[in-house]
Structures are given as structure tokens and as C-alpha cells.
Image 1: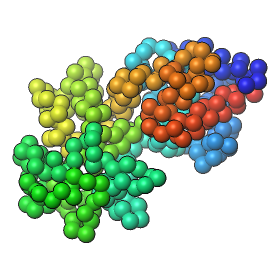
Image 2 (image 1 turned 180 degrees about the horizontal axis):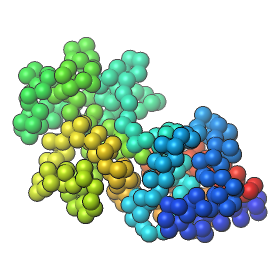
Image 3 (image 1 turned 180 degrees about the vertical axis):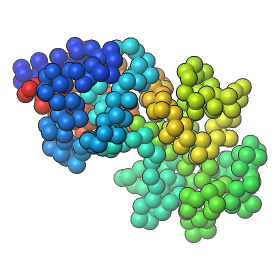
Length: 327
């Protein structure tokens, strides 16, 4: 790193954010623009950010500010530094795209239509979601609680207490069963973990284990958001694993889309706490640019699980810091 870049990186570690509006104030004073406009002018569609940008609509700007007004919920701290803001925003841009929406993972590609996509292992693309830490469809189709709560849905008559071991594997039996994600066509199948616990929200919260952490968050929720309070009441005194089995895709879409962004933000918080507190970036420039605990690389690795993603993520954050050093 040049001395200018080191100075900019040092500034990003030292500048403290205590409320969401501090971000806009910093970029306006330093660059004359808010973060979205500055990022689009200086980083978007360039070098490691090729193909990535931020939306400029009033709705996107409002949502961006709304997300960062809730940083204490995401980080579990009252203050963060600019490097943490840049790093997590870089994750957002990659995971949910330009409009900053807490999206639900889309399914389907050639050869793996609809439900087959999350169920299948696709070499070089994705691992099957029909495996631990999810419960397999085979296990659920033989689970009395699952059968009791989902037994009236489409395909239940032929799949309750199944002996078909294909439902414990990683190749969807699409020659014999529908791949449609519609409740009326495949309800008993689509409520299994492999589809229900696919990615949602700002870091694409995935797997039963992470959704159970969110269930615990909801059951102990002390805020005032109406949607979250409704589920807190519904799930009171139930074991989190029971809730995970009984809950539906519609429940989770409701919580991620209609909670004033609290559940997407809580998804970051609980994942961070369970994954070594990767959001707590080191204040040492050497450490933060390394690959160990406290580094930008480690943050990318913990969120994505892939070394290639982690390296790209680290380079993207560095690109933003370099651009800032030129202001």
C-alpha cells in the first residue's frame, strides 16, 4: 500500500459512526456526495466491482438509510467504524443487489428447475440444501410433527412415512415428483428444510441452524415491531426446533419482508455471534488486511464459506478505500 492508501485505511478505522446519519455526513463533507452517488461515480462497474452498482431511486436511498439506522441491531454495538460500514455494505451489494431489498433466494436453472435447484448438488455452483445442518426431506417426511402440521398439503398422501431413500440424497427425483414451488402443487415437499431454509435477507440467511437462532431472537424480542411481536406470541413456550419444523415459507417471507427490516438485520446479528464475531474488524491495519480473525477476508469467508469469494470481497473493500484515498 502507498502512504496515501494507508492513511485512508487508517482514517476508515478511526472514524466512528454512532448513528446512521454520520455516514452521509462523512461522505458529504469529504466528497461532496452521499455514499450512493460517490460509490456509483468512483467504484461501481470498475475493476473488482464490474457489474455491480447501487440504485439511485428515492426508495432505495430511503431503504439504505433505514438499514444503517439499525446498525446497533446488526453489530450489537453502539458504535462502529467506517471500515465496518464499507465492508458490510460491500456484502450487501453482492448478496442483494442494487435496490437493497431483503430478497429471498430464487430457485431454478437449466436442468434443475424449481425445487430441484435447492435440493440438488450442482458441481461448481452450489451444495445441496438437503443435508445437515438442515433436516433431510426423508427425515421430515417420517417426522410425526412435520406430518401433523403439513399432512393436509399436496403430495402428503404419497410421501407421508415414505421409504423412498432418494429424499435423503442430493438429486431431486424430478422424474416422479413436481418441481413446482406452488403450494397447491407441492406443498408437503416445499415446506421441507431444503426449500424453506434457503437464503433470505441481507446476507442470505440459510440453514435450519441459523433460522433457529432467529427463532430464539424472536421468542426473546423486546422491541415494538408488530410483525415480530405477532410471531413472538405465536411461538411462545415452544422449543425452537419445534418451531423450525412447524413454521412455513410464508412465515419466513412475512418476517423478512414485513418487519421494518428488523429480522433481516437480526439475521446478521445472530449469524455474526455464532460465527466468531466476524463483524468485529481489527483496528490494526496489518490484521485487517490479512486473512485471520479480525480481517476483511475472514468476514467474507464466514459469510460465504468460500475462499474465492473472501478474496474478491477483500479486494472490493480495498478498492473503495483506495478510491477514498484520492478524495
